[in-house]
Image (cartoon, rainbow, N blue to C red; front, side):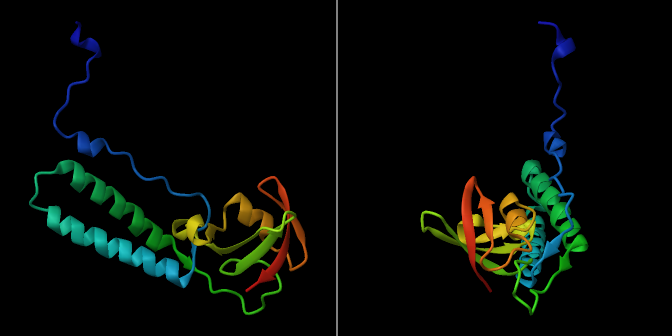
Length: 154
C-alpha cells in the first residue's frame, strides 16, 4: 500500500478536536441561565485542574475546548429580566397554549444554552418560540404543523 494517502498520527489527535459552534443569535440569558454558565465554567476549571498531571490528552483537549466555549458565552451573555407587563409572549416568560385536540403545553422562553424542552424550557431562537413571540392570550398560532391557541402568559 502506498503511504501517500495514509495520515500519520503524531500522537496529538486530541488537538484536532473541533471548536463548539457559537450561535449567530444574540446571547440572551435569564438570571438562572447566567448562573448555569458560571457553574459550567467553575466545573470545567475544576476538571482542568484535576487533569493537569494526567496523561489523558483527549480529556484535557475536550475540557479546554468546552471551557473556551463557556467563557465566550459568559462574555457575550446579556441578562434579560422578564417584563413586568405580561400581555404578550416575551423572553423569560412562560406561555401555555392549547392545541385544537385539547392538549396543553407550557414552555418558558429562555436562552439557547439553557434550553431543555423536556423541562419546559425552549430557546427564544427556536421555531416554536418565533411563532409564539409577541402573541397575546387568545391569539391562534401554527405550531408544529398544528393550530394552537395561547391560553396563558406568566
